[in-house]
Image (cartoon, rainbow, N blue to C red; front, side, top):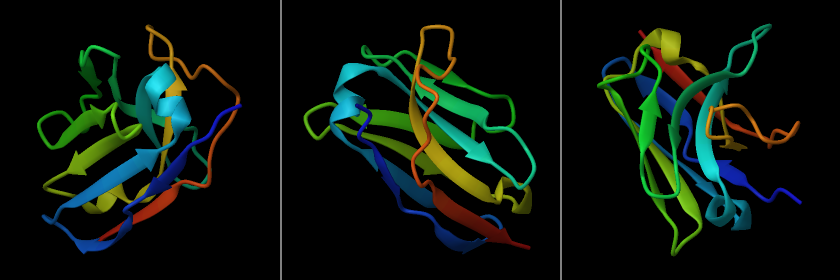
Length: 117
């Protein structure tokens, strides 16, 4: 059973920063990814982190976003800097495979990020 709760979203001006958190028992059991979804679009993978901290970033966020995990707290974070209006979306975390595909057909409630210009 997947147990994950995303938090930390909000409204921020372009150029600002937010840190998202994803907490739950599932974090301690899998590689984890952060995704986002805009209206009418698919879930896009932004970043992932393996158990031993190997990371992956999509080109759209490389150099601006940083994924990290604290296994003692069963939490994975997404530090987002230099935010742009096009980063506006609902952000989700989910377990991912070594090939960065979602392990489950499941999404939590997500957290809304809105970047104003």
